[in-house]
Amino acid sequence: ILTPIWKSNSTNLRFRAILSAIATSWSVRSMIRILFLCHGNICRSPMAEFIMKDLVKKAGLEQSIQIESAATSTEEIGNPPARRKLAEHGISCDGHVARQLTNADYEKYDLLIGMDRANLRSMYRICGGDFADKMHLLMDFTNRPGEVADPWYTDDFDTTWRDVEEGCRGLLQKIISKEVRTSGQAGCQGSGN
Image (cartoon, rainbow, N blue to C red; front, side, top):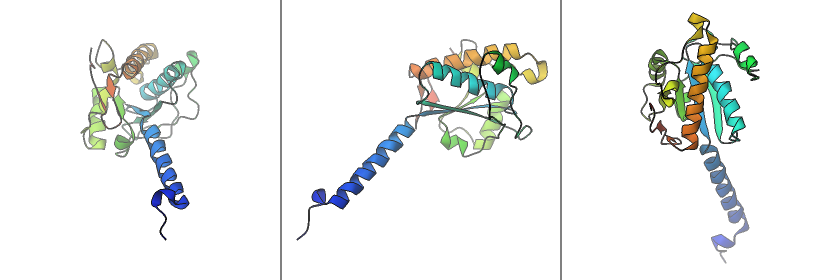
């Protein structure tokens, strides 16, 4: 005598395991994954990473948004970020070391946010283009689109901080108001206000 599939204990357990795996992958997929990028991953992109993490934590969205940063070059790989400006604002960046963007990061992250146009060109080159509209400039999420000031040349971390903080606040607001599409529909609506 054959037991119907819905009455079989082993089939039922397998089905529950499959449903559980699907539900887990859906909840993981619903997490928004952001990668901030600059040339060396020691000034602007780690500043954006840790400012955004702080803003996300204060908004109670830590379980919904994953944030990291990387470089478009290999020049600073393994070096720590410029910590002083973050520390002035009570933000720790302990454990961060510079790493380079890889082609695989394009699939892993929903948004790849560059600090300037040179970063965007390098991002396109490394990732082979931007077929899913995931790449943007951070300042495009503000009322004054453009580039984030680079303190490497000016040593003006105050201006960079203001640019990055404004960009991160604008990006978070667009995520909260669902003006940024992610998870298979990555892109941006209404950027460049």
